Image 1 (tube, rainbow, N blue to C red):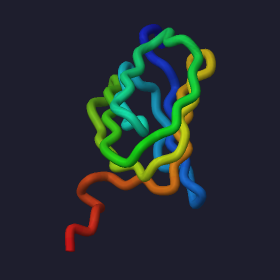
Image 2 (image 1 turned 120 degrees about the horizontal axis):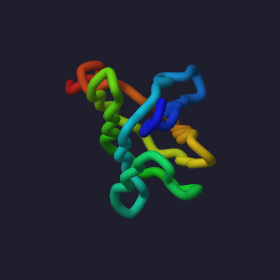
Image 3 (image 1 turned 30 degrees about the vertical axis):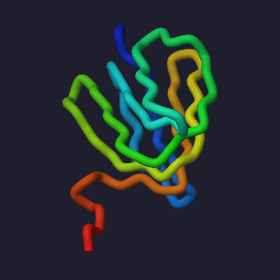
Image 4 (image 1 turned 90 degrees about the vertical axis):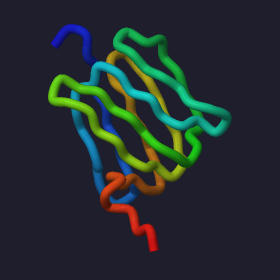
Length: 92
């Protein structure tokens, strides 16, 4: 599909999210990084915070717990210690 790239969000336990995305914003250790289709390759150390994903199916938001982000070709891979949807977080 033109104008998209593949996103994988992976924790040690499982693949949390596999989708085609049109835009992704993730927390880096020193700020936020935005990714659009045809992005140059990169490797970032991720921080703790909110991951925002826009896809043809709609928007999704996850909370991620550090890790690494790598863009190669049309594939963005986020390896993180933990990833949860905001409604799954324990606020207690």
